Length: 332
Image 1 (cartoon, one colour):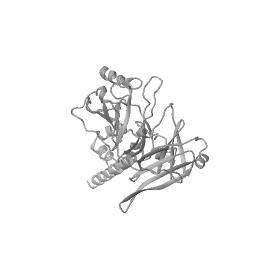
Image 2: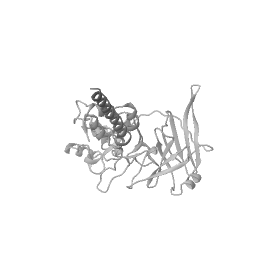
Image 3: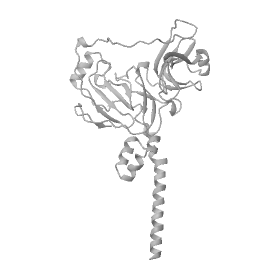
């Protein structure tokens, strides 16, 4: 009996050690290579797998994503809107991550349902470009989610999309506005911006946004200088402070493949400015003074207002179902 008890104990220890080894291999080598959809499915197989998938340490390594989405202004040869472009300076020179887990980034929005005949007629009436049923575009980002619309002008259909997991939900349909409601009149708050050093008038390109760590950041460039300004608050007073300045000639000398630069926006977690250049987007590191290029596949125009900083938190963001949605919650 003693031998049997000892054998049983050693067998249990062996199996326990194997489970620990298998779990370690899964966490370090296997799970990081799975797509988010496959990872979610694995978690529903057993409690053991689910415990691994939802473990905070693993989630903190797997789920975070940070970068920017660009919605290019342009169309393909068949009139469809160009697909969103995702760039992350942390992925190696401004290129989208190449792992299977990031395959949704930069995907087109063709998985969204097509427009009805009524909506197609409405989109054409208000000047939607190309094929009215295929003009799904990104219009905003927040909390690890993207807001997409069909059509750029007075859309009536909006969708919330998690580009990491592929889950999306259709929002309730808006009423079709009349011709009288198509005014572009808006009201905005105005703040004073710096005009550059040594000159009161600039013929420049500029953009404004939130810098990493919080606070407003403003970038501008002309034929001779590229500058970055941060809004600082001291003693209750706010003032613009010069954070970075480099001559255009010096910048182009470091990067001979670049002909000119136009600031587009800022990376949400890195000290990086995205610059528009002919045929490409450049990620410029303020700290290192280096640029990495992402060449565009279509002839298009990138605007700062079509750039959306994106940060996915260190956990899976689930989109709740909406009862009065035009469609049920769906996963791609």
